[in-house]
Length: 374
Image 1: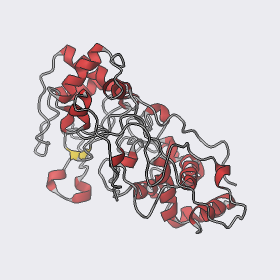
Image 2: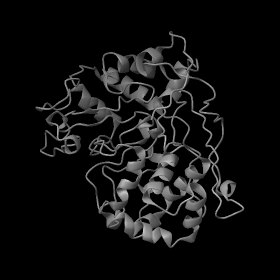
Image 3: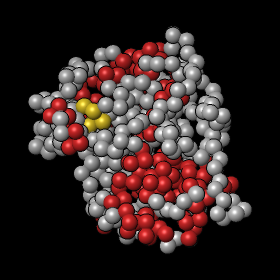
Image 4: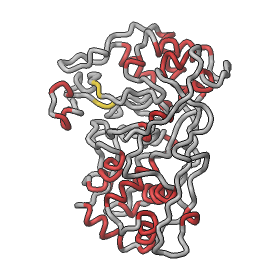
C-alpha cells in the first residue's frame, strides 16, 4: 500500500526538478501519521518490564533532502515500529541466520559499497558464487518488487528469500531455520515483545524489511545544488553532466524520479555479445518481451557500488557510459529506449562527474550490533 501524503511544491525553476525528479518534493520534516524526527531505537528502549508484554513504538523518520515522501511504500500489515527496526537490524547482521554461521544479510550489503558487496556476483556459504550481483539495499522504502528480476513482490518476501537459497544462506527450508532460531532465548523474547508471537518466518521478513526501509540515501551534492541552492555544490563538469543526463544521454528514460529509477525492467543487451545471456525477468513472467530484462537500479550511491550491471561485468562508471554510448548490444528483445548516444569523450567524462555527485547521507548511522541475542 502506498501512503497518500500531501506534499509541498518546489519552485518550477529548479533544474534537477525538471530534469530528474519529475514530481514535487518536500523539504524539512516528514510526518507520517504523527511520525517525526528520530534515530533508530537502541535495544534497551523496547525492553518491556514484563518479558511477555508487547512493545510497539512508532518509528520516526527524517528523509534527507531530495527524497519524496509521497513515494513511500509501507504495507498496511507491517507498520514500522522502533522495535521492528532494531530487531531487523540485529537479524540483518547475525551470521547465525545461515546454515553454517558464516553469512549474514550484511555480507552482501555493506555500507562502504553502497549496500552492495563490491564483487561482480554475490558470495554465499562455503564460498559459493551466485549468478548475479548483490542489489543495493538502500532506498527500498520507495520500491515494491525486489531482486534484479522482480521475483519478490514485496520487501518482506525479498528479506526471507536468501535464507533457503542453497548458495546464499543455505537452509534446507524455513522450518530448519526457525528451529535454530528458537533455540536462542533472546530471539524468542524479542519476537514476543515485538509481535506478540513466537518466531515465524513471516515476522522475520517483517522485521528485516522494516530495518531495510530505514536505509536511506539523499542530501547528495546534486540535491544540494538543485534543491538547496548551493551553486558550488557540484563542479562545472558535473553541471554539464546533469544537462547531458536529462537530454542527450537519455538517462532519464529509465533513471527517472527522485530515486533515479523507473522501477521497471529493461533489456540492455547484457550478455548477448558473449553468449552469457541471463533470461532475467522472463523467468518470472514467462513473457517473451521480458527476455533478458532486468530492473533499473537506483543511481544513488552509484560511485560506491561498483562493479556494475546485474552480472557485475563493468568495473567503472566509464565502462558503463561507454556501453550505453554504443547503444548497448543489439538483440531481438532489446528495449527500444536503448539507442547509440554519440557522446564525445568530454561529454562522457562530464556525465561520469555528475553521477559521482549522487553520493549522499541517511545511511551512515547504520552499524552492526555490539552484541547479539543469546
